[in-house]
Image (cartoon, rainbow, N blue to C red; front, side):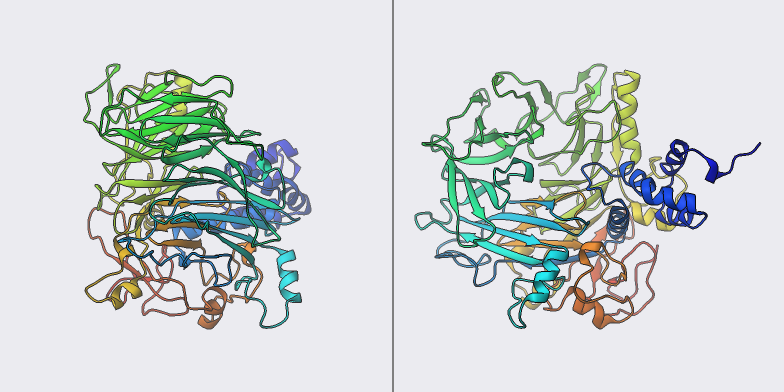
Length: 618
């Protein structure tokens, strides 16, 4: 006797759903019969999300399915809406100039360091509180943004002409710009920012920010949500006056803090709220054997008890340590070079520098634990994927085939599928796709017990890549699998400058941040500016639910899109190119609401065009 799909038990139906790749197939299943409709509504969306996206994801499964698939498509189509952000004129700033201006005597602007996170505060997907913090010279700038039905309700109750704290999506923002009178820009600049996450904060109505400075200050500062002009130094950490180069806070409760002090020391602290006197470190890791000019550059917790440190120039520019609150190691757990493993040994390498480190979110693979995989970027312009389960120094490399030598200053993983890299020149932001084969390769190595000798995957996201990561792809699929490089300088402002372009045009991308893996927003720090990039299609009639309030976008009228996304005309127009080896063309971005000649092409947002006014052909 044959069994129809609707008669399958829930366990088997769940297994079937886990193999469905497209949301439209899931939606069609809901139309077949009442039983399948009820199963998909109850469990199907949850299974679809949990098998494709790393946790944590709030349990609004239908909205999560809609939002995350929209976000993935927006990344594939290069749907970027960038704008420079700064505090409004009435933000708390007792002495400091607006970010974007320079203190007299300084020859360059500040170098922003950024952190951001978001927390769900209501009964639906759109009810969020997003917190953003950055260092603007010696000033600390914070923005807390409330979204969802409660913010919409407050917007409706606000009298006309008094809604300056709301944006076009009816998101409400509160700003702080904290300036201390005895601090001097250029000498006391903020070098590192770390926000305590929602579960680590002792109070739900305040933000807690760890701030490190070039002059040796390391403080924990609190700001109350309901009082935008209040701030308090909760804790001061003892640094012996050494420059704080980088700080990382782990996910434990209470959290540990690791700080790069000067050129040769990593200090570990307990984060304590309040108390008398400065907090002393639990212990220090000394790198006294390093020879000049080698020094520490950054540090990051791969998990709550595993710390990675980048340094250079050195033949082994990455070290990993096991950290316990009661035991600070004097010796590293593992060292990584940038050379290949051959016959059980690494080939001799030249000294080089690793600037940026970033752990990948854990997958659902049972053989993989948190902190096993991480990315590194350095002086040679190559991003490497490292796997602590293998003796190999790295298991994959990623390079821009056009601009392969620009040093990598910042990294931002966006789940397991893609990541962003900020470079040392021309405000370039690079996107790379991580093929599923890389993940499978690492998993196979762990399960098979092989030595992984010489196994290194050269990843190129161009259409001419001969590796078998994307077999039998259509033109549209190949377009989606390409990486790209975007110039985060406003094209219109650069062209108005004549032969003298603004300084940010040549700036490095110093830092990158994203509130969460579910967020359609990223932040990039370039000289004197913080750029907010919304990953969304301006002409989409059904965008992410966090954009459901405010003016509607019908997808048909250009004026609707302008009113929805660019009512103040401050959206930047940027350029990018795709990672191809031949026939590379610079793509230009049209204004929101501006229709360029030619037809929209598959695999690309319709705002992109080439100089001839025609869209790029796939």
